[in-house]
Amino acid sequence: MQRDELARYLDDCLETARFRDYCPNGLQVEGRNNVRRIVCGVTASLALIEAAIAHQADALLVHHGWFWRGEDGRVTGFRKQRMARLLAHDINLFAYHLPLDAHPVLGNNAQWARRMAWQVDGRFGEQDIGFLGTPAQPGQSAGALQDALAQTLGRRPQLVGAAERPIQRLAWCSGGAQNYFEQAIAAGADCFVSGEISEQTFHLANETGIPYIAAGHHASERYGVQALGEHLHAEYGLDCRYVDIDNPV
Image 1 (tube, helix red, strand yellow):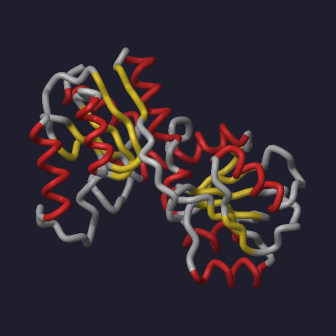
Image 2: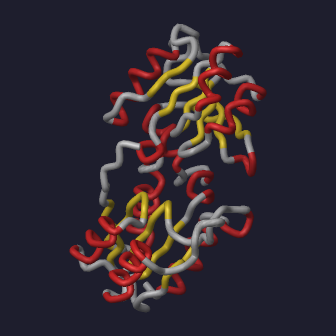
């Protein structure tokens, strides 16, 4: 598949034009024109770049790319090291941030729900990034949901607030969405599940009686890019390989 054709398809599929984001979505670094082999991963780290080189990939497809708003834009130090390895091997870098959180089928939140058997029936938050629905077992406690998440994610999430509270209405948003907690409560959630947790989250959970579960930023955002790679393989026959660079955060 031609690089620019792939870029257009991904931009259209993920509706990148409708999002206000913290980084550019789409083709971030141009490599070779013909794309047959893709390595997918969460973050365009040096370790993932080295994995792409080892697999002789034509492109990297990630959720966390480069050129974030407000960061130092100079290509020095670790940024030079990453860029040099990518350019030396003529590898394209495609990155999709909020569009890959929000997609109703391939996105992180939709894929997380599928693995947990959560039923989606609504959206909330800025640009409708957050999802609303019911847990696999309505009425289960927040503590039981924590256990179920631990089994699926392979790591034990952190729970703050009323672990015994029964959950009929669940809200979730992958990654660093702890600031959506108040909006989740306003939307009627009995529990909010996200990736990260902040100091104020503890107090809000205890003062409102609504438990909060932090599943890990990386752990909650592994699934969208995997689903996108599988989709590209099914639609275009591209060789897409997911590489997980383990990250406990």
